[in-house]
Image 1 (cartoon, rainbow, N blue to C red):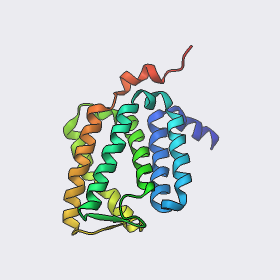
Image 2: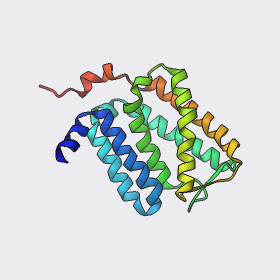
Image 3: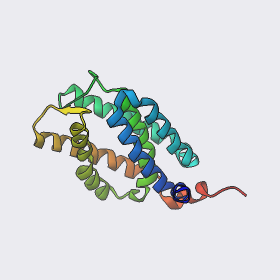
Image 4: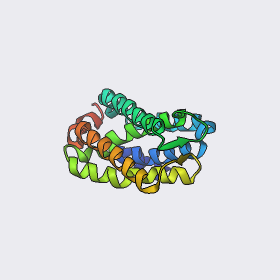
Length: 180
């Protein structure tokens, strides 16, 4: 088991993706009660890829702010309501911090592949909201088709932005290699 964990941590993409899966579960399942778990997992993900994320800190901050503003807009316009909050809850903000960090590492292969990024975002983005609703974290307030359209557009745009700013693995190679 220890060797498996070491292997995951050696691969920065796999480490960020696996840790983010746990971030999502802690944020959505635990919400406010598990904020500390969510925060620790995010710190773990950032610790596994510190040079890569530090190099992209401005883009990371931009994605977190953009994501939170988009979430606020969906709440404000009555698309969704998050359990326990009139606006956007802290666990959702932490989720955006975790997602933004993961996305800049894992989705680097989408660099300047805008159409692929938009399609992936439009297909897979809405799924997380319906999963979160089933787990009791949110309530979608509009008809299913409307929610799919809103979140498909939302995520297509987010993924295109990620495709624009993510630094490809070839550029990250020098950053990821240990100093001698």
